[in-house]
Image (tube, rainbow, N blue to C red; front, side):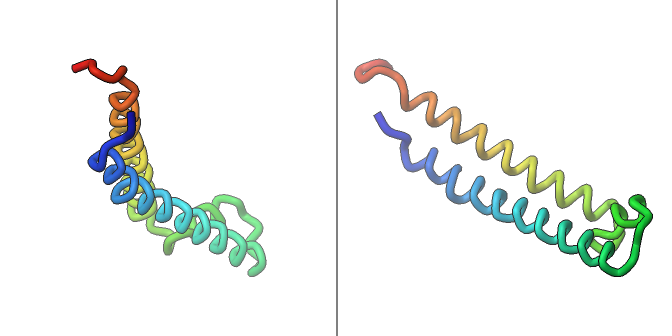
Length: 91
């Protein structure tokens, strides 16, 4: 009983790049916040608006695509994993 190549492809081709992109987004956002605070910005609303050039639509779309991709591909891998747990000989 093992996950087939199709299930592993969902994990490696879909989930891992999305997880890496989510980590990169977190690092970029954290660095933008760090730079804003070190630059003397004390208004939290202005600090929160600064990441990714202050364009909210770009930020929301990036986060939605990355996190949606993570959820969909992880769900597909979980289905493949669940199917691999069937007893041997079951159709």
